[in-house]
Amino acid sequence: MLAPRWRAMLAAVVSIVLFTAASLGKPLVIQYALDHGVADRDKGALVFAGVLFFGLICVIYAFQALATYTVNRIGQDFLRELRVRLFTHYQRMSLSFFERENAGRLVSRMTADIQALTDVLNNGFLMLIQSSLTLAGAVIILLFLNWKLFLFTALILPPLLFATAIFRTASERAYSSVRERIADVLIHMQETFAGLRVVQAFVREQHNMERFGAINERNFEANVKAVRISAIYFPFVEWLGGLGIAIILYFGGRQVAGEEVSIGTVAAFVFYLEFIFQPIQNLSQVYDMAQSAGAALNKIFALLGLRPEVREPEKPAVLPGPVRGRIAVEGLEFGYIPGRPVLRDIDVVIEPGEHIVLVGPTGAGKSTLAKMMTRFYDPTAGRVTLDGIDLRAIAGADLRAQVTMVPQEGFLFSGTIRENILFGRPGATDDELRAACRDLGVDGFITALPEGYDTYVSFRGSRLSAGQKQLVSIARAFVADPPVLVLDEATSSLDPATEGMVEAALRRLLAGRTSIVIAHRLSTAEHADRVLVIDDGRVVESGPHAALLARGGYYTALYRQWTRGREPGHGGPLRTSPEPA
Image (tube, rainbow, N blue to C red; front, side):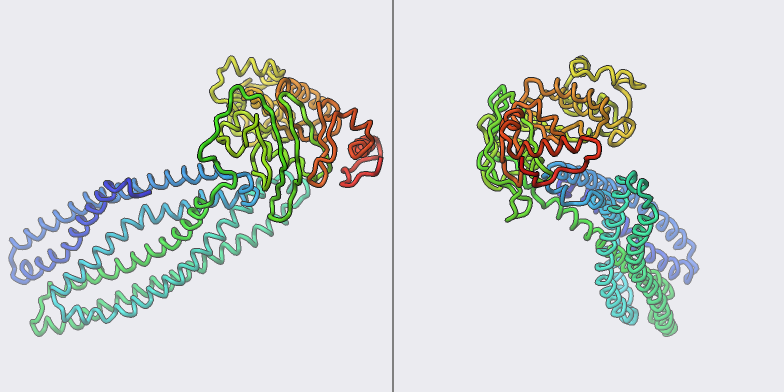
C-alpha cells in the first residue's frame, strides 16, 4: 500500500536527513565558539559561529517542517485507503460473517485500531528515521572527537540496552491486551445502545452499568499495566542520562586539566550525550507505538485476509433478458455447522409469476430456504437456479438486480425518505419515484409528512412508525422493480389498520412477479398460488391453501392450531409437532 507513494516517501527521507545533519552540526559550532571565540578571545570566531548556528537552525526549521508535512500527508493518505479497503471488504463479506462477528468488534477495527496506526504513521516514521540517523551520527562524531572519553561514556550503554530489551518484550504483551480490552468496551456500548429500549423496559440500567463497570475495569487494568511498564523504563533512561553527564564531567575534566582535550570538546560531549539518549528513548517510544500499531494491524489484515463464503464467480454467466423469474431448487442440502444440516432433500420449482408462501413451525428452515434462493448462503449439496442458471454462476450485482429480499423490519438509513426509496435504484428519476409510490398507494402517506419526500429520518427510521418504515421499505423494492421478490412477512407486528395499508401495498408490489413469502400468520397463505409446508428442514407438503386443508394433513393441523391461537383465551406459539388432524 505504501509502495505507490515512494516519491513522497523519498522526499520525506531526504528532508529528514538534511535537518538531522544540521542538528548534529550544532554542538560542533558550540565547540568552535568555546575553543576559538571564548578561549582565544576571538570576536570574529564568535560572530562566525553565531551566523553559522543561525543558518543551521533555519535549515532545521525548513526541512523539519517539510518532513513533518510530507510524512503526515503520506500517513493520512494510507489510512484513508485502508479505511476504504476495510469498509469495502466488510460489504463484500457473506451474511454468515456478520452473524458470527460482533458489530462492536468490527467498529473497533475501524476506530481504535486505525487510531493506533495513525500514531505510528504520523509520528513513529519520522521519529524512527531521525532518531536512527541522530544516534549513528552522534556515535561517529564522538569517536572522532575523543575515542577515550567516548569509551568511558559507553559504560552506560549495556544497562540501557538491557532495560530496553525487557521493555520491548513487556510492552508487546501489554499493548496487545489493551487492544482487546478496548474492543470489549466498544462491543458492550454498541449492544447497549442498540437494545436501549429493552434495557429501559425491563429496568436493567443498573445491571448494564455493573456489567460495563467490570468490562471498563479490565480495560483500565490493561492500560495501567502498559503505563506502569513505561513509568519504570523512561525515568530509568533519564537517570542513566544524568549518570552519563557525570561521567563526562569527571573524566573530561581530568583530561582538560591534563590538556588532553579542550573545554569545547567536553561541552560537545555533553550535548552529544543527549543526542544518544534521546534517540534511544525515541526509538523505545517508537517501538511502544509500533507494538500497539502492530497488534492493530494484525487484527485488521486478519480481517482483510478472510474470504467471503459466498464468492463471486470467476467467469459470470450472462442472464438472458428479460429474466422470467423461474426458481428451481434441486436436491438442496445446507447446514450452518458441518454435519448438522438445517435443510435436507429440498426439490422445488417455482414458475414465473407464481406466488409461493413458506409456512412451518419456528426453526423449521423457512428463512434459511429463502436465504438460499437469494444466495446469502451457498448449498452444501444440490443447487438453486434462476431461469436454469446456477446462482453460483451469476455475478452478485446481476443476481441482486433480479432477486430482491424485503426483510420483516423495514430498515431505513439516516437520510431523507427519497434517499431511502432510491437506495434500491439510485438512477430512478423523481417522476419515476413519485409514479411508483402513487401506483403502490404510499404517496399520500409520504406527502403528509412535514417535508414530504425530503423528510429526514435518523438511523433505523426512528422518527417513523413500524408501519411507515415498512411502507418505505416496500416502496424501495417497488422502485427497484425486480422480477423475483422474497419477503419475510411484513405485517406480523403491525396493528390492524396499518396492516391493511401494508397488505394493500404488498399486493401491488407482488403483482406479476415471482414471489416467495415467509408466513408468520397463516392467513397470508390463503391468497398464495401454492403453499410449501416446511418441517425439520424438509418440504413435507405442497399445494394451494384449500387443497392442503382438504387433505387433512400437517398443514391442516398447523392451521387449526393457529386459528385456535387467535381466539380469546388461546395464545402462544405454534408447536413443532402439531396435533394430528
